[in-house]
Length: 355
Ligand code: ATP
Ligand code: MG
Image (cartoon, rainbow, N blue to C red; front, side, top):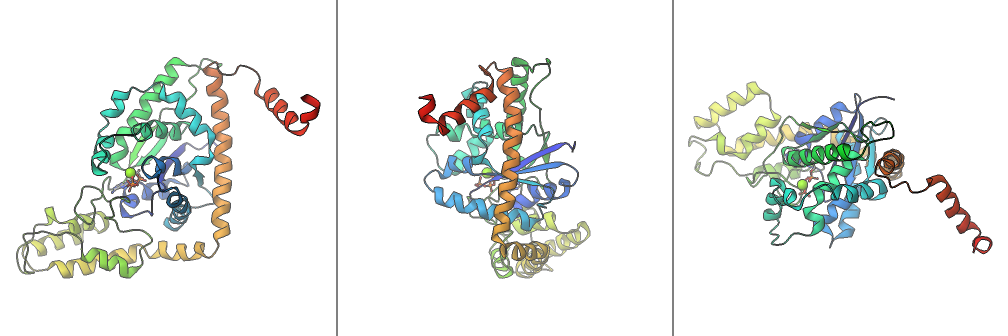
């Protein structure tokens, strides 16, 4: 199997929403048959903000796996990976941390925005450094393509820089670079706004429409989405450019219908209530196949576990391959590893013999 590789993923902080769908999930589902696709459930990275709620992170791991399957990630072709169970990622994060300056992290625009949104006055080492661990997520499996939303572009750029630096400093046995420089792939709508009008629909901000939302919840959420505040009566002329519902229409409705809606809104021919109602129905319909798949997979929880176990096992093998080359390039292969592992096993099995 010699397909080019994709790595993407999500923090295990909650359920997937329409922002994920348009930002990167749609691309993953589309490309999984063309590329060797690894989808990472980032539970360690979730701890950078949720370290005080580990049980919630654990629950989100399963929820995310189910979300992927519901969204159309095909367990027959894609590899679903649980981050905390891949030692190569942790090891590579430590090595990469030598190659990134604190200033580069401090000036990272996404880190700044997220810290401000969360009201952090001081940053932990782990939060400030999470883009370094993301570089390791990408590098451990030597991924070439990373489907992400716009907020992740600075992180993919940092990953490129770290990997380039690594390859300059350390060379493989044959003089060839050991790691692969990745490229970001933006989704059809690289940043979807939140229901509250905030710049980003986000799990942690509570302003999302989730893939798992049942029809009545979708209707209720769309009904309270922020629209043009200047519009009091349905017959007042509307301003689609400041309306959240219109951005959703732009993301999810065909262009021809969009024109019509825009004109009707500006002329005061269609009111917000009616506009929201028809959009909600369109979203309910868009998510119908995901709802069906969800119900099917929900009925076999053992299967979801099997998919995660098999995917994680494969990721560990890929990681071990990469790390063997990395350790060799970094002169960290002080003695042959097989001999070391054998010794370890022997000592465990026969402590009395070996002392
Ligand atoms: P959290 O608030 O816990 O950070 P999140 O909603 O930001 O959650 P992540 O797990 O951090 O989601 O992001 C996963 C992927 O989804 C990333 O590639 C990110 O760019 C993309 N993404 C998240 N939110 C949006 C959005 N509103 N629009 C487009 N892409 C998004
Ligand atoms: Mg995020």
